[in-house]
Image 1: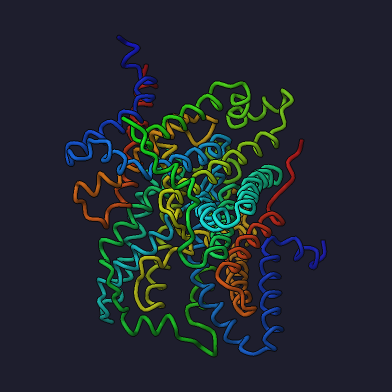
Image 2: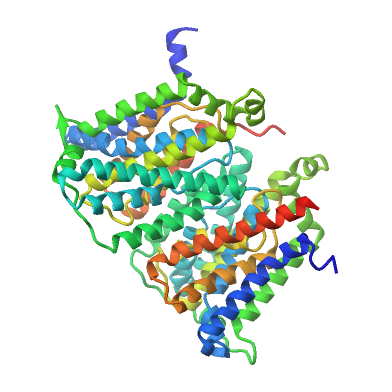
Length: 315
Length: 312
């Protein structure tokens, strides 16, 4: 097979093509004005999408029915707890970060325990637990918005030669995720379980241990994202995770990861994250109102999924 | 005697039992609710929730899940409060169009073998966006006949109770007792054997989604009849409530094992849970969390009963 042929078969290609096309359309509409800023903003917001999508990707890859719906609630809880504990003091940043990750760890353990002990589908388990996390965040926060430490806020908005530092950081995180997925026993086990859970078990993979680790990792990444997002947006808001429910799943699926499980790829996450952000920016630039923007976002996501992942039922 | 304590019987008893316990607790905390008007107030909002729960039940019955029902009910409510009130013909056409769109969504999910969770999440954006387009700010007005229907004061028994019982019985006989209902449930229970028997799974699934759309529209209309006006975010929490209601009512996630009567009981229980928590003077911050906890407790009880069943 030629190199070009191999490139065309990469599942992540279409997300990147879409991202570039949408960006070009926006740039053409504005005559190139501000396309640089748009790209920089896309890298920042895309970075937040990629952090949660990385965890969601591993979860989805475990096979049909595996999905984490508690991501928005865990993000909010982690962000709230961390911001309140730090209270704007720069010295407390490591403590805040550790707390946010710890919240993620606890959330992940609770989620997996519910799935395992109650033997309920992950969708329902993470949905019910997310109610509790959301309530805990409301209770902890009391509607107050605690400002993040200045040094942390600066880190999340800083740029090197126009490239947001946070984007560089998340690219490194994504590379690590790629290595974990393709080069470690854990990553290969996740893929194997997604392809055939029974065969994976018979092959000697500790299926339940891998599943537990996957759900915990997903929640820890959500905690990290909540921490960074709260720092970026000047404090934790109770609805800060809202758009991450659909987007974490959409980024994974549009990025070329199979929803049926067993096949995943990391480069597509970045492509899809940029595509989704640039899409909203494009609709904004075209002057579309909130209603039209939502309708089109929904339809385009479904369109991409129909085009990319659907295989015709054989009858 | 042994039939009385068999796990199967216990499991069937779980939904009505939880409802009774909850109702008794409310009566104990606030004796004034134990009257015609008290019950009317307590149960008013249960009717649209029950309708949405039945809608969700049809979807769960064919092994799919619908995360868009909240947005859909909101959209139906917005159309009811605007077009159906101002230009009834356009309103009726739009609501029928919504049912058709739901059927189309089901057909798409089946034909392309798409995960319903992703498609319905995407569609929730579409419904919400359309609702915002139709009614950018809260407002509109309920058609008079809906208002009259939802505020009916029949003698002796409050309207919400009659409506819930009728709803439960109608769906029970249509889905559980009729021949076609059995085939429809089979689409979730054993699709392969149905297909071999010559049924078109596409038609069955589309029918179920259309039924779900119909009840979603009814839920939106009932809601507007109660609130008299609409807003695009009116029913967003119905997505979670409806799933929880089906599960509380003894429905399973796969295999076409659902119970319409249980689903209505589950929905009423959830509607009452909110009142119960506020009578308890529970910190309002924990209201949503308590609903999640109730769901988890009921699921845990069911696992316990299942263990007993397995031991026998």
